[in-house]
Structures are given as C-alpha cells and as structure tokens.
Image 1 (cartoon, rainbow, N blue to C red):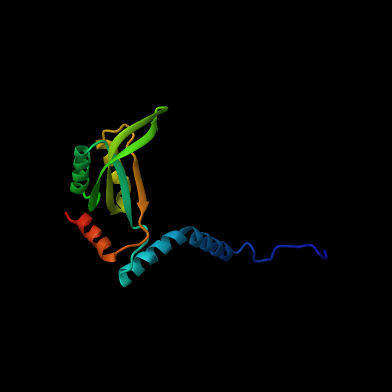
Image 2 (cartoon, helix red, strand yellow):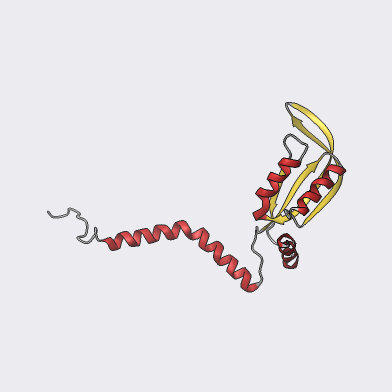
Length: 156
C-alpha cells in the first residue's frame, strides 16, 4: 500500500534493545557518575567539592546544656568544631501560644555525610521536646580548613 508506514524490518533485533537499555541506564546513573568524577577531580587537583561539609545550628536552653551537647558531639566525632554563641532572646509559637525564652546557639562544622547521625544524637540528648536542628551545606571556603575537618573527624 502506498503511503502507509511500516516499522523497519530489523526493529525487533536485540541490538536496539541493548542500545535503549544502555541509554536509559546512562541517564539514570548520570548523577552517580558525575559525583564520582567530581571526587576524582577534587582528589587530583586538591579542589573542594561544594556541599561536602555543612554548618549545623541548634538552640539550647542554657550554657550547661550547650556545653554538654557540644562535648558529646565532639567526643563522637559528629563535628570537628562547635561554637557556643551567647544567650539570645527567642520568640516562637509553641502549642498555639507565643513563647519567649533565652537560648544559647550551637554552630557546628561537620561533614555533610554525618548530618543524619548528628541529628539523631541531638534528638536523643536534647531536653527540648522538638529541638531545632538546621543545617546548611557549605558552598566554598578554605580548603585547608576542610582538610582539617576531615582529619579531625576521621581520627580514632
């Protein structure tokens, strides 16, 4: 019949399926391959991989709780450094009411890969029913400082 479309005779060949499978797999694994190549590039050039390290912020009710939590975090190698910021006023809504309190802020420098373990530890030891645990990935900074974080957190 003139003008009717018909599939190519070799459409059902296994070669097409292999090509289609390879293309699909490549697309799905692209983020993994990109990550591996970035790590290799960083290892060879000494560059920093954006987001490999994070800052974590946690409020505590007082200095003693802040120091106890900070020491536990450092002992467990969940962060390389913890800054304890002085008391600040905090206003927030809790159970439908506006509350006001004085809190102490912890700022931790850690590896992004440790965030889940760090969050779990804080939820376990923190006296607040719902501790605020906020993290921000670090885009860039001093490569020597990042190496120090790695060294400190990998020491046994």
